[in-house]
Image 1 (spheres, one colour):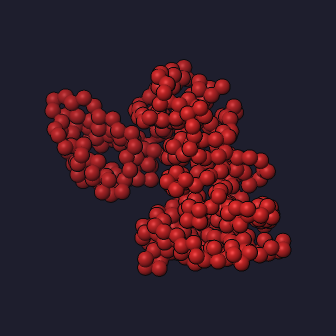
Image 2 (spheres, helix red, strand yellow):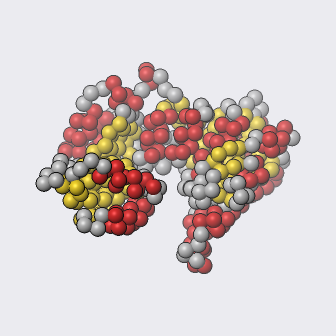
Image 3 (cartoon, helix red, strand yellow):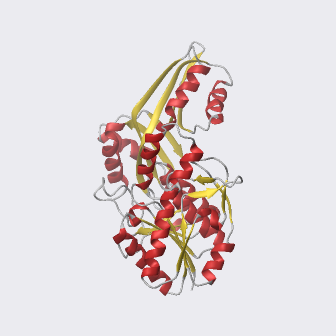
Length: 398
């Protein structure tokens, strides 16, 4: 007998038929002698629909009011799922995040969980209830509802599993595990039985949409046993855990991110402190920078290019134009970042050369390069991103 946290995404609870399918999956786990806590997302496109409704009323609505609105989607899912479980003859109770003491900071629309109380959840489990909790949200010190950003229900589930010291946290999605590439785009993509926390974190950060990256960070920090599996198939998924050296693959996955923008500043002074002031300005305004390329100085001038998430590009350019009125600033949003991830890279030479050769064979030019111990990323023209993923995948994964 164990304690299992199960998270179900929006497609898993999109309609009545799917809600009953999820209810039966939860009941099956319960009947195996486990205590079960389920975390749910809003149904289907509910969140997008609510955003559209807000835009009809006030396109400039405050983030606080948007959180009040968007948090209702998960409440609907939780209550309907509890009703379905009750209809099938089992005890269930739905609870909002604030009812179980999920405390966050006050960064509306992108809050971070600070603490979770286990008291209410354990009390309901002791009563024999299956506990259904709204994902994606918390409450701040002012008793205001906050939301955790896109994919935040993954983070909710892992945080709850960590607080309860659960034996397992299962993330149910519309795919049946983590693949070496997007199986919808790459025919020979392979499902992984196991992937390390570090590899999964890199893939999530680099554009793979299986897990939210903050959920993986939490899982690693608190040693949460994590599994990604399908809501629609009764089969084993992919386990996310610490992986021994014998299990490490050279390249675990190939992914792309089309939501990046390259910004270039031409004609900066070639003196100490220029890069510091530039990136400090962006950091102070909560703009994360990814790939950075600095040219060799000439005539006491230099150029710096870097990438940011496309959603932050407009704000970044406005800040830079104000701070550097005499420099030329160019923006390119028709680019894509393609990456390979694998713990095995740490002990193998020539991985970058093989990746670049694959791109050469595909006739694809590289604009920028970034590397770490287990990751290599390149910036290329967006029109070539799918082609690049296929050629690179064929090079490393047979």
